[in-house]
Image (cartoon, rainbow, N blue to C red; front, side, top):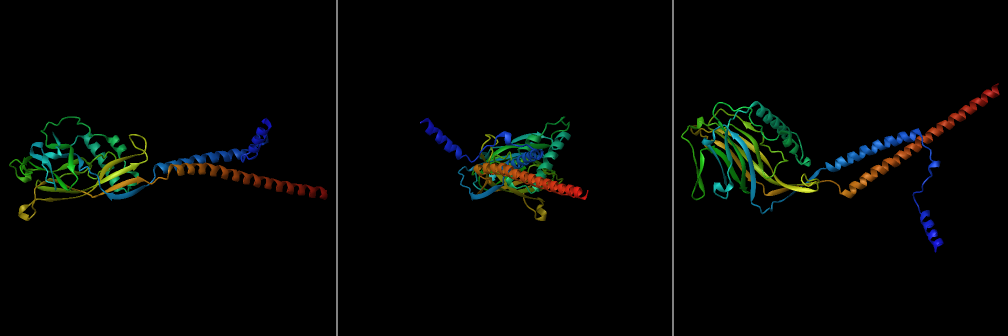
Length: 369
């Protein structure tokens, strides 16, 4: 029985496709060590490149009908208008005709429109960076991550000192819950007064339109969760010396679902539902005598696209990625072995030719003598 078991083990050993050569028969050379070092560096470089390509892979776009039953979307606003809060008001109107109070309200803070030196440096730095991100041809394959930018600049710093003159501006900030239909968010003169039949009015002071100032600065304007997306309106600042000005922003919001290989919160594959938008703007002076009618103010006319954009990574499957890494290691190692054998063969060929030529020259010398 014991002998039969040994025969089976011996038969298995005979099938070994990876025979081992004893160390006593191995010859280590300088050329072999040099090629081994080069081989290690090449493998590390190729593996790093492959891992980097896998993590920062491209994306695919899928356009599907927006079947989300949630009829609400958040509008995040933080902007400053160059008029005291008692003179202006903000409200929302949409095609459903809901009461203006159903969308929530923004917090109003009296402040100064002119920024302090530290605040101005902060705003201009964020403005320049956001402008670069908008102008450069960044694809959404980079998922438009901006979280590092936000962590870098953070919130607007507080003033180093309080101005002696009275506040001349109003900061409006907060979140409004909008319905997913076309609507109009606007800031005009006067406070909002809800009326029956879903109507409303603005109670404005008895002032000439020319005395109003709708210069404004937008620190935040986004829909939904948007901590990692570039927002076209953020960092915009409009200064005017005309009172009867009408500023219009035409916004088209697109629901977007972004899937990533790595989720910032969990560290594993995750997805995030957010919104992106495009915007066009125009401005004009209100002059009823010249036929330019309207109500001075700042108007954001928004609409919601009926399609949802799904952005999914275009990375290869994990098994294929592992196989590619194995192919890199095995291919470089095998190629290095072939190169080493070729170098050794050429070396021995040159050495043998040199020895043969030297032997013939020595024989010729002896014959001549």
